[in-house]
Length: 127
Image (cartoon, rainbow, N blue to C red):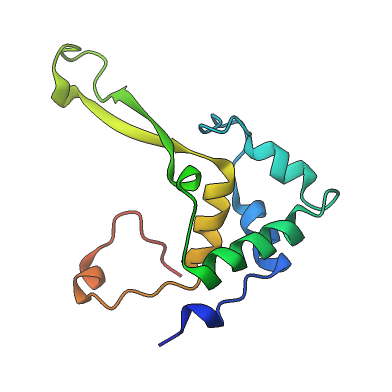
């Protein structure tokens, strides 16, 4: 089993995570668009700074509460349905762009030991 202190997020990890992100999406609570990271990553050495930051988070086992903030928005499931019915809505969470990058680099290091996950196929990538 991998110790959290053995994690090392590299500049390459950050660059790959930035490359996977989508543009033209709503900004999270911090107001920073993903485009700021996509267009500025190499020029501003963002990958270097984020790799240092994410490694500090991993080493100390602490993520600031601002990284866990999100805006929750209700979306209508069926526009022709009853708009007064709460069951006709689903919630989406809009998180900060930097949080999305942290989640992406963390995902490559996380492995589930729960055998119920073997039966989960929704939102799961197949290689």
